[in-house]
Image (tube, rainbow, N blue to C red; front, side):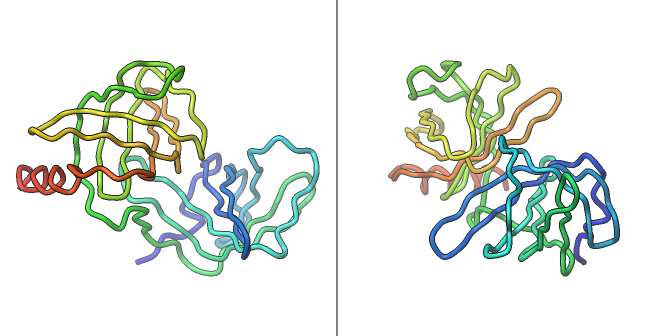
Length: 201
């Protein structure tokens, strides 16, 4: 069963994936008001006073549930509406596992290998062959979508060195969560995930 747009609360933050044949960007937005079951009023989180036009691009909208797989609506329509924008969906949202790979919980402190980026250690929440996430309870990480970040840790006899690009940021009262897409090769990663999976069973 799909997820209806009208099930989202007003004030919910979502992420817009905007693309054309040449490039793609991600843009944050806030649901201001649900107008109909499939139409909502949104405000964009960007520093521009110019009205954006979405006529010649593809837009997917993604909603992150705390600790669960995100929900995505494909090929939504956005049009200027007074001082904000109206967003229309043409079906129910579906679960979207950004990492097609199986992810395992880690909960291990990692060393930060990127200079001048706040804390020297961060908590690794989970990991897969294609991505990982970090939790920042002190809210010291100053990262934006698209930033690269490098960490390393040792666990179960494996040395894991990862460089990731930020693809999502979840801000909560008690913790910020950063999701990364892995940008480098790490020879121990596959073996490490296999052992972690076996230990969880």
